[in-house]
Image (cartoon, rainbow, N blue to C red):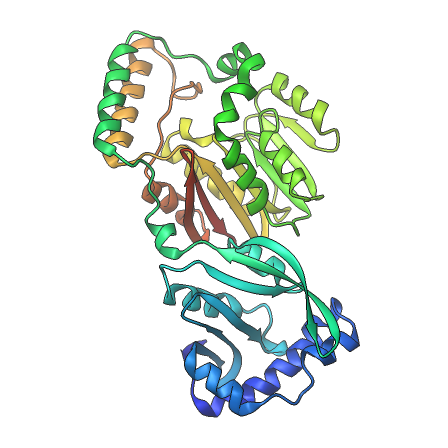
Length: 390
C-alpha cells in the first residue's frame, strides 16, 4: 500500500469510489432512499476539488489503483474517510486515519461516523459524544459525533504534576512503612471487602470513562481482575449489552458482583494461569489490577489477552503508572527487599505496588503483538492505555 497526498486528478475517482462505497458497504444500515440522499452520483466536482485542496487530503493506492481516501481540516474535523468496496478489511482505513490524525497533534479529532463506521472509530479510541439525525435532500440519516483526544495529549499525558514533591512523599511513606509486612493478595482484599467499593470511589470518573471508551458494538467482553464489578457497572450504564466474562481470584468479590449483575459470567481463578482461549472477545479490560506484577508476568499475560481477542479487538487498561523511572525502580527494589526479608516465594502474589512507566507498559503490549498502542489520558491517577489486535 502507498499513501500520498491528494492530486487534482484524483477527484473524479474519489467521487466514483464514494458513490460505490456508500451504495454497497453502507447498504446494510441505511435504506435505498437514504443512500440516494447521501450519494446521488452527481457531486459538484469543482467544489469537492476545492475542499480537498483546502484540507489535508490523502490518497491510498494498492497496486497503483486508488483504494481509499480521507481528509481532515485544520480544526481536526475528519471530513471524509472512504475505502473502495473491493479493498475492505485490508487496513486501508486504519492507515489513512493514523496519518490524518497525526497531522494536527494538538487538536482533538472529530468525526461524524455512520452506523457502519462507528465500530471502526470506537476501536481507535474515539468516544461517542451524541447520536444525531442529519437531513440530506429531505431525508433523515443517523450518524454519531465522535471525538478522539489530541495526540499531543496521548503522548504527553501528565501522570504527576509535581514529580519532585511526589517522589519525596513516596520515599517518606516507604520509610514510615518499612517494617509493615507484605500481605498475600487474596487475604488483603478479603480483609477489606466491606470497604472496597468505598475505597475505589476515588476513581469514580475513571470508571465512568471506562464505560464510555469500551466500544458499544462489542458482543463479548473480558474483564481481568473484575473485583466487585465497578467498571462493569459503568459499561452497562453506557448501554453496552454484550456478554461480559469477569475473572478474579476473590470468590467473595465475585459473589458481590453477581448480586449486581446476574448476567455476567464469572470465573474464580488466577488470570496468569487460566486459559483465556483464542479469538473469543471483542474487548478486554483491566482496571487498577496489574500494577502489582513484574514485567515478565505482564508480558506473558498480554500475549494471552492478545490471543483471546478477535481480530480488530481492543485491550483497555486503566492502571497506576509510574511517573518516572526512579519511581518504577524504587518500588521494585523495595518489594524485592521485603520479599527476601520475609522469605516470600516469587510465585506468591502480594499486595504491593510496582507500577511501570507508561513507556515500559506500552512496550510490553507491543511485544505481545498489539498495534496502535496509545496512552490516552490519566484520570485521577488512573492512566488509560489501549492497544488493538490487527
